[in-house]
Amino acid sequence: MSSKTPLVIFTPSGKRGQFPAGTPVLTAARQLGVDIDSVCGGRGRCAKCQCEPAYGDFPMQGLSVASDALSEINEVEERVARVKGLKDGRRLGCQATIQTDIVIDIPAEAQVHRQVVRKAASDRRIEMDPATRLLTVRVAEPDMHVPTGDLERLATAFEELHGIAGGSAPLTVLRRLQPALRKGGWQVTCALYQPTDGAAPVVLDLWQGTWEGAIYGLASHGKLAGGFKPRNRSRVYKNLYLTGGSANPGPGVPMVLMSGATAARSVLEDHAVPTNDEWLSVRENNSSPATAGA
Ligand code: FES
Image (cartoon, rainbow, N blue to C red; front, side, top):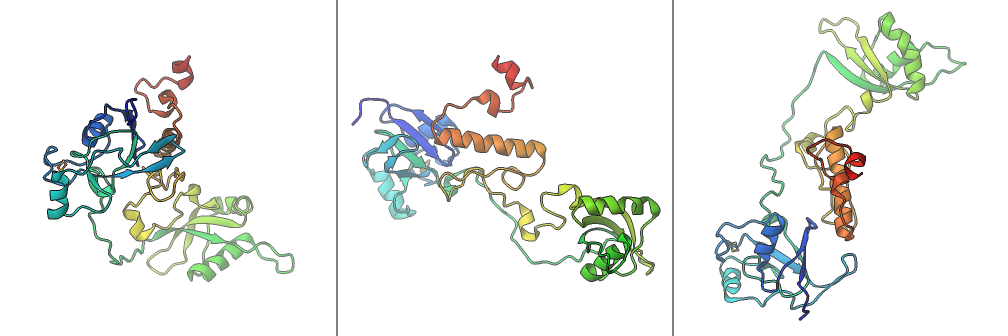
């Protein structure tokens, strides 16, 4: 056994710290703020504190984990395995103690704050039929052999793509149609008002390309709209980090920045690079990193 204080690395959080040999995994996890469940207070009754030690070489962390990095399975763990069932390779965090350097994964079901979708996905259809809708259409480019106006070709696109005939536009909108089409590469998004009395539809406003560069486009993601944003550090693929409006915690500039900071911190943690929290954390005093770091 090594004489140095053992290093413990928890995944997927990436949190790490050194603890004296003999420290229970649960104690180390709590001291590092690792998300791990425990209902019985560490008495070996609830089986909530399950963890999965990983053995072998971890070049990314510069660690080599020996097969005896944790204490031997004790009677309490044997009883829990018998009575409640314990998957192969799993240990109880409150019973297993750290002996040497170790990498420990906390499975999703042992995390208190894991993402839980409490709403069952369903295919209930809700017909949306608002009077004004945003529609993105690709309009045919002008052709000198078939002379047509921009509005005429826009109306044709509405009819072909959405079955809406006879679209018109007031002069204020019409003036912006030509530049919008050219800047948008012949694609525009229109706010189209369709009167319920059968009168001709009217384009109330328009934008070049997709409306305000929407992250999700104009349509919702149906069932996925319920919130299945992937975490910033992939649990499936090593060295895959996700950031942006579609990743955790979500869209919007502040959220996207948080997502980038979380992903960056994960990369630094995984590659054992010291984290400069002045750059990566959202600080309370709102001073600029350059000022604070000076
Ligand atoms: S905390 Fe309950 S079994 Fe470990």
